[in-house]
Amino acid sequence: MSNDNITLLGEVTIEILERFAFLLGDPAAAGAAPAPPAAAWLTTMTFTGPRRGTLGLATTAALARTMAANLFGREPGEVTDEEAADALKEFLNVACGDYLHELEGNEPLYDLSAPVVVPADRAALMARLAGREQYALNVEGQPLFVFLGD
Image 1 (spheres, one colour):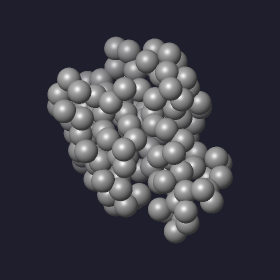
Image 2 (cartoon, one colour):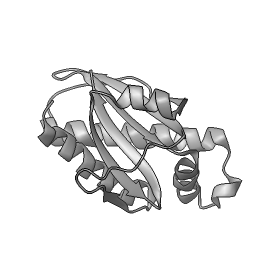
Image 3 (cartoon, rainbow, N blue to C red):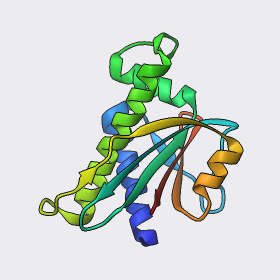
């Protein structure tokens, strides 16, 4: 996939952040991506059809709780880990659907896997992001990385 596609994914992610989670995402300046967090939640899903690949995001548990809190109309401290993980899964599912729609329009059909969330330390996250096209955002002072891969 091309850099244009990762830029499109970043733009879709920013729009979904606003629409879905009521959050503002600022793209990282070129060469100034935020440092990967020491502990992250890595969320991935695959898609198959005219294109096939993996779409993923990585962020902190704190941002996941903020997303879930905004969805549920609660405070982040009231959100369970399970609810926060579910919010990340749904966010990625919506982002994947919107991204593929932007690329292909209404016609092609895709099979999407169920999103999966796993904890990742900085080393595991860096290994997962290595060699993959990625787009980094700052959201409420927290890093959010979206990426494409095979």
